[in-house]
Length: 423
Image 1 (cartoon, rainbow, N blue to C red):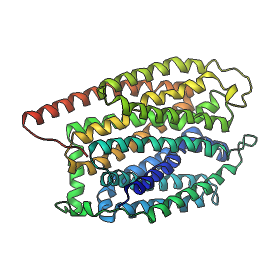
Image 2 (tube, rainbow, N blue to C red):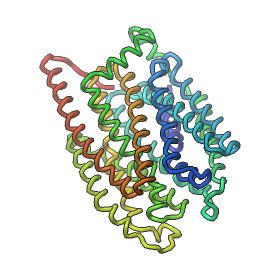
Image 3 (cartoon, rainbow, N blue to C red):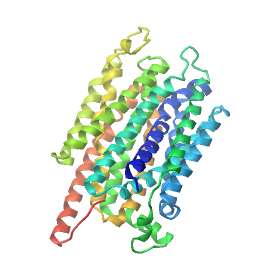
Image 4 (cartoon, one colour):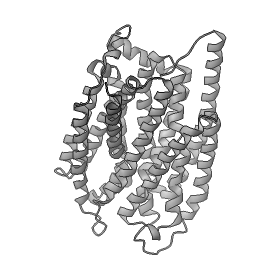
């Protein structure tokens, strides 16, 4: 089995969904201009995406092994290809909702399958952690690319133009290419069908439920939920913030939001190196404190924006460049807490734990977008982003609890003479 070819296919799948999932911020801005919907109405697009991810992950996590990782990924790519082709043909708001629901369902299949497949093509725990970090970083490269791809189809001279919908023909081409690459790539899944027991579907589902009520897992769920709430509230609404608060043109608002994706990708690359020498809790504590400081320093600058006409990057206010750097500070949190929880559990529980990660990450993203959208509409963009200080504080406390709990679990295992294993 050629692992490099498979890894390339997995990375391209994640890259494509990086573009799709985080296009929600751009689309939120565009549907307000094109279809005339309000901020709060547009914010439900995040719910259509994230709730479909959560529900699908919860219901089909146990089915994925039985169906096969490759078949699930092919199905997901086929769904997105078809829906992307339909988007320009049916230019109405409900079709946009349907599209994000389809993207959410497909991503749930992709994420569980990609994470599980990575375990089949890596040699040991260090190799797995290394490739996982590269995978998450490549996802952010997809996010970064998406801002520039979408901005090329936006007509600044006519904000209500539907020309931006033509971007979905390009996306359909990308997903179809990913489909063909996966179709002709061999993935040996015999290992997952030959390991020990073959529990029933009911037993698999029951194990996920039982796992979700463990104190350690409950603390992790709170951490994951709050982190994604913060990340998505900023990422989904940054284009709108740039446009309505900083007075950037629509296309430039979308392009400059790419700084957040770039800083997040860089932050994860840097964190992968830092974690080799520095304890994860100390690293994340410093990172979150810096994120809060950045919010407090930069948002007042947004109020100093002048009435000067902004036409390009050189005219953009300082806040448009500095605020997205919060992504660099937040970047290490999500991969780190996922690694911490998986390393604290037996290998056989990694699959159901991945399902729970997807579910509660999706719920956090939906909550963050809806709350931020509502604050945007009734209190303004600056107040909406100041709100991030509250969940950042809650996340710091939750990480402290997670650190204490994992340390306690580790000490208990050591005193019992247990030998743990990861990935």
